[in-house]
Image (cartoon, rainbow, N blue to C red):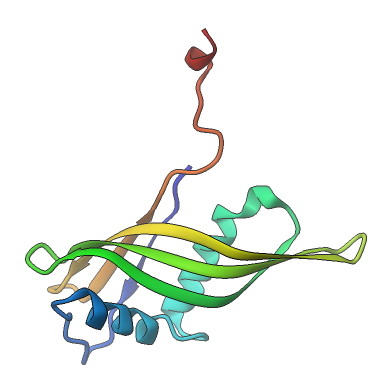
Length: 130
C-alpha cells in the first residue's frame, strides 16, 4: 500500500531554491493544527495502522533529502515519536525515532504540493514463494 495526500500552499510562500530553506518552509507549512498538518497525520496514521493501538504523533522533524529547484520535485524524510495506546489493557508503547519518506512535487500554478509515501505493508507476492 502507499499513502498519498496533497496540500494547498500558503499564498505568500515563495518556493525556496535550496534544501535548508525548503526544510524551514516545511516546518512552517506543517504547523500543528493546520490543514496540511492534519493531512500528514492522517497519512502517517494510515501508514502505521498495522502496528495496532491508537496512534499519537509527536516531535515531527523534517529533513529534505533531495530537491530539484527546476522541476520542483524532491524527497522528504519525516522523523517522529509514535505513541501507541492499547485501550483495552491501558498499555502505552512509546516508539522513538520512527520515520517515513515522502516524494513530493510542487505545482506553482495551482498552489498545491503533492506527496506520495513509500510503499509499505507486505509487498511480497505468492510468486516470491516459488
